[in-house]
Structure formats: C-alpha cells, structure tokens
Image (tube, rainbow, N blue to C red; front, side, top):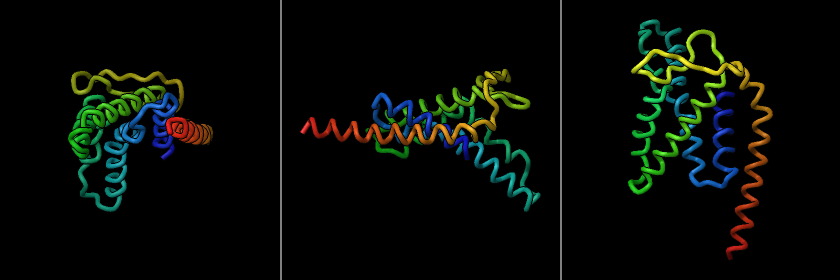
Length: 166
C-alpha cells in the first residue's frame, strides 16, 4: 500500500508542479504496473492458502505487466476505455506514468532479481539499489504532506488564474 501511495504522490508532483494537464491519468499510469501485476499475484497467493488447487503459474503470470513491454501493452489497452478523441493523450499519460513507476522502482534494492527491463528479449536485470524496497513506508509520512501542500498551492494558483482571466 505504501508503494502505491509513494508512486501516486511522485506522479502528482511531477505533473502538478509545472501545471500540466491530465494529472489523473498520469497518476493512474503510475499505479497500473502494481495494480495489474502485484495485486492479482497477492490475491491469488492468498487464495492459494485456502484453495491449494490454484496453480503456481497463475500467481506469477502477471509479472510481465510490471515490465516495460507489459506497461506499453497495458497503457494501449486501457486507453480504449476512454473516448476516441482522448485516447492518444490518455495512452501517453498512462505510458508516461508507467515509465515513472519503473524509474522510481529502480531506486530500490531487492533480495534476488531486480527489474527485467528488456523482457522478453533478455533476462538482464537492473536496479540502482539506493533505497530498500520497504523504505517507502518511511517515505510516505514525508511525501503525503508535501503532495497535499502542492495540491493546495495548485488549487489556489488555478483559482487565481481563473479570476484574472475573468
């Protein structure tokens, strides 16, 4: 949960501070890799504790959706849920959010394999290892107030601009 909050806050700050549009789809794109890969995997793992008949491969089949090729595919497919005239912008924001997700994740270090950035073409893994994967729990109490402050500041700035334009 803390990881999704961290990704959401970072995405909001990247889009909101410069005042760029489509913040919501960018934030969604930043969350998609975990929502489409980690959540089903965790749910099936919990289900397997109750129903051992759940095949192990079904738990791990979602992993490619947390890799560049999977993020590209997910952004493309999800863009079709939006009106035709918005699909290109939505696709680019979902994809940009997914790329930001990977960049933030690459800061982490893991026990075992890092991120397979060239999957399915290579098994090469990469991570910078600057923070532990559990460190997001400690970052959230700092990042959330900063994000809320920026949201407040942006709302005031947008209201001021609207008054000046009127």
